[in-house]
Length: 205
Image (cartoon, rainbow, N blue to C red; front, side, top):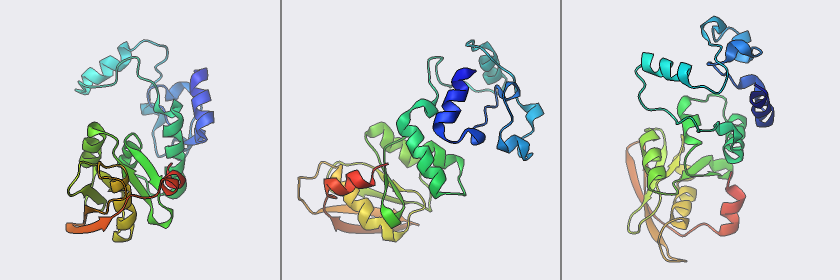
């Protein structure tokens, strides 16, 4: 129980973290106090055992879930920084926005919004699955490279997204490479050079 309080405190958003499996053992958080969540429907599971969770998973037909050794993402300092950035820049947050925090490199491109760059094949596939029509997505045209996603991004974010795409691609250094960007079913191919290292480091979350 003490570790739950430590995670909540260090995240900086203790009043927003609802733990449905053990909520009846903890102080009510904002969502409960405001009546958005019925506390009586939440559980009071405690201890290190996983029998109760496994029973619930079976009841709901859930066959795939994290192994017992899986840790809370809120203890990951990088994830916590990304979460804090999301909550400070977006009021209308969706479940997908939180899912995106788990994948790729995240950049806050000044007034161009957030841009996420896949680090590997699994990242790229996860981002591709989470992408929506309202997003801006970019891929390299002629070289192997990352899947780049700007959530809810506009065409104005295209040059920044393309520059990041080239930066983490296999295109030769200082090469102006072709990047294909898709936004609301409109495909655009543009030439871009890799973003300067100091700029990417300044943008990274």
